[in-house]
Length: 507
Image (cartoon, rainbow, N blue to C red; front, side, top):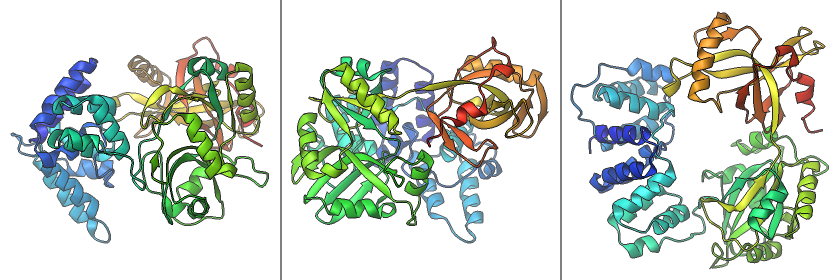
């Protein structure tokens, strides 16, 4: 198949809000693919090419840009092969070869294909084909039940491979896809609620469990072989030898555990999130040890537990790893749920997850059986600068530089503003247009990518907390910051202070 056909389909999908229209367009494309193209195309359609990022930056893409081809001739397989070559070309002297591969690729592409290729290489691809929509399209194209396709994709962790099996295999082969120890499955996800009591109303009797501020892990053990995967199904076994040793000591032969890992201080309290992630992301063993806490078990000694109720899975988990079971209580009383939530916060954790006690483990799904509850903080901060956007935000000012008021001059000039982070999250198209015009009106200077402005615009920002950071003068950075609204009713002198934000740091 020509790559242009796939590109045109992604444009059609991105241009409509109709889920049915998206599914129809994607299914029509999937039916016309050659078998070898199916996994590649599914990866591109979901903005997750099977090679991942291949180490090509904006400057390399810009340098490779050529006059577009007059007629389409690139195929999906041609593009896949080029990505393979880019991924494999590394080491001394590889720069020239990678540049040549890019130039050849771009010269063979039409203008729409060039934009698509750049989006893939830079990780800025927006296709409008969320995995749920694409899963429905695979079912439509293959004439298989959507539940069968969804379950196979979840248990294999591979939508592209599932699409190939659904389209080219038999119904029995699709149904035979099951849980395999050593092969990660997509993790079950949680909805959100404003309070533990409200969450309990949605679930009924539930296990109310601490929500830890750590890294999600899925641990597979078969005999003495232990593998550890992230929530994105990446293998990080070599980074967590302490967890491997612990799981090898559990009284089982085969097991799949779901949980979190985090760094603890000398008193057993959680260390700041960035310390966990620094250690979690290290290929070399560090001094900081990560402690695992498990909240679910999916398989034990030949017995799959996905379709068994949470109550059964908790009993098994308490028997297998009682010392590493995440804290929580089973209750139908909203007052008890709120108490557990307050206990979790007092212990330095994020909040709680409320889980229906009779629920099955719905791999990869975000339903109403698991509900997370954690406080969201909002603060009024001042815009100090704004960076020009890229991709679909090209030509608009997007990424905000945010500052907190420093009335006493503890980190600079008295009454000045201390930068505490950046965000481009939560900005609607309307806000993007407004701030692009507004910030150029109050511009004081600019660099190639950033417009610096008078510190007079107050914006309400929602955050999950702050973390220690040497990047900014105040020693903190915002966590998961997103724009709520601009506060034209507030003067910059009414913004929240750096001292208020620093008080969120855990002791």
